[in-house]
Image 1 (cartoon, rainbow, N blue to C red):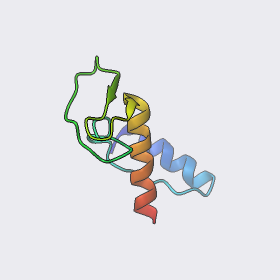
Image 2: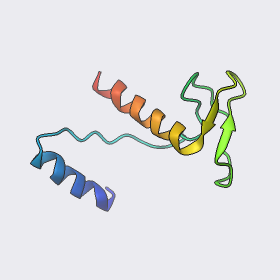
Image 3: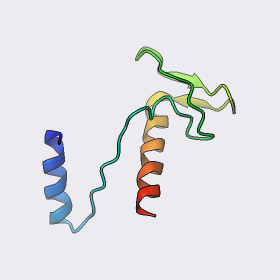
Amino acid sequence: MPVGINMLEYKCAWYSKQLLVVSARNTSQICSACGQNDGAKPLTIREWTCSKCRTHHDRDINAAVNILNCGLKAIG
């Protein structure tokens, strides 16, 4: 487990919160609007447009939205 997870577990226990760990794998290349996987991109590509739905994404924001949605789906 990554080192930072221990601190997050501690803080969540302290504040009576739930920590849910989800995989961040491929979250920057999957469109958060339609689910299309447009494949790997070099880190120099900071913005991209989905080839299916034409939604324009900031790489980091798109990944964050995908991670949030994955967590929300996991807790129901």
